[in-house]
Length: 174
Image (cartoon, rainbow, N blue to C red; front, side, top):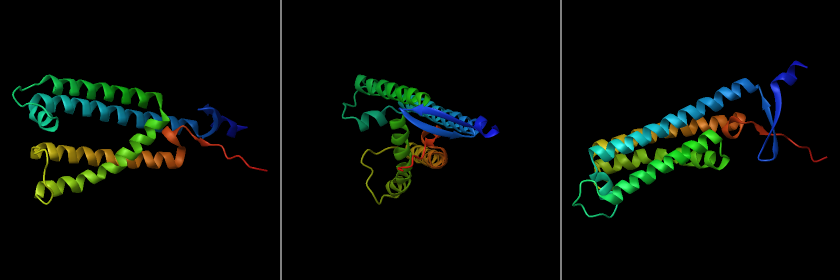
């Protein structure tokens, strides 16, 4: 009966899940949560720092008049972005399944940002928004980090399911 100690049944979204070696999966869940929360907090901090240091990035991306240094629509866009990041953090903490898949797909596709940025910096592809080089390099670094997190999420999913909460129990059709 020692194996019963490591096997536990949960119901997530009304479906029974089989968890194996519960302690290690909980460590994975908390590690993934921490990594994603830290990433989104750093992205929020980066967005505020970019707004403070070079608000022209926001004004060149949004169709705004460039007379004000901090136009109201750019400030509202930053506030909306911070609210969105807050909602994503809440979803990470609450283990929303749809958010897991959305982040997995988005983070896995972020690797495409690297060659696109390289092509823009070398002049092969036109840089439509004329971002500064430091901003493009920072975006490329963030893309590499998020791609690695996406690969971590794929490996966790393959072994332990969505948010490492367990896999669906195999049901025989006999």
